[in-house]
Length: 113
Length: 110
Image 1 (spheres, rainbow over the protein chains, first blue to last red):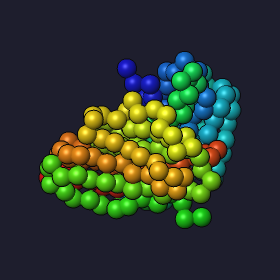
Image 2: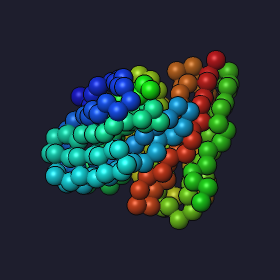
Image 3: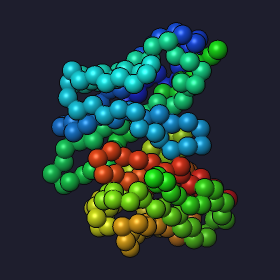
């Protein structure tokens, strides 16, 4: 069973058409939830970290929110340059000291002019 | 700050050959992670180090894979012998408070 599930897998929007990407997670103890942006041929680029339910963070046209079971990445009035794959990842508390991130498969977002 | 530096950017090798991927983390970051990305499985954690010590290698797929971190500024991921199913993009990331990824090495095994 996947710990991190992102939906939709792909999304095509018109410029200016707002929408939300979903990330649902199942971990026993959430230490942090991360959003990354990945452009073709590049490594993931950090966007946000959320630590507790109810927390929200914003950056330009992006806003990330967190509940106990899922996170949303809201995109308001997107522009073509927002086209990318958006990745969600979780870090969980572990007695073994596990520190790595567990990633979802991502949402491939295309913004058409 | 040059970020996390990986080399080579692209590697094409024949099945059975040894492949070594390299990573230079950000100075001062005390944790280093190796990930593999494929279309089917997404980003998967292979191994990570804290203060140059391997902590968790449970993601390393087989004994053909090995990783070392001889000092705080250098790490290698080695595959010997390589197989076509190892073809993927391999990312290195380092962390102090946040995780920073390199640009990756695209490995093709033919």
